[in-house]
Image 1 (cartoon, one colour):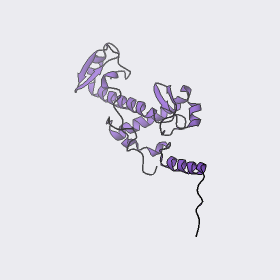
Image 2 (cartoon, rainbow, N blue to C red):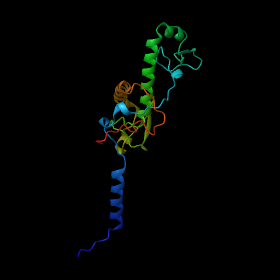
Image 3 (cartoon, rainbow, N blue to C red):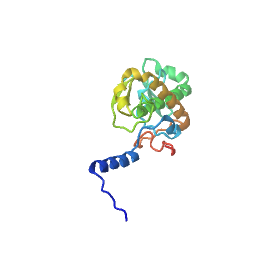
Image 4 (spheres, rainbow, N blue to C red):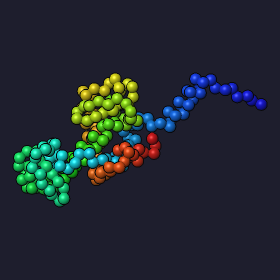
Length: 186
């Protein structure tokens, strides 16, 4: 007959922490995210991006509607320029706006230092027009706006690929942009 030795309180806490930590979401590598399954919310609205120059529209810019989509320009004459080739301008605008929305949604969960998806709740830093979140203590110390050039490039490439894979569909009711997009192997 064997007799169990009770765990010391510190050992019991360590075991409990290990069990909880193993079930918690940790940072994930980029290949863990299926870019064709991301859920990007429509944060930037159509009229907030000039379809001619692909820059933020101005508050008092001229407005117009094409194919039931509201547009607003950033410079005088944008409506006239748009109407010269509305199909091309509308397509460029739709793509860029979705990419902008991807960048905004994903920068807050993608660590610019390690290039990993973060579990959340870490240090956030503004850089290159986006809010970025670190994935760990090491990255907390390294988070600085000058570290975001490469991260911005990587995220823009992923955004373009995701647009092609998703068709630029918006999903506004997801809890996270990667909800349902993490591959089973991870």
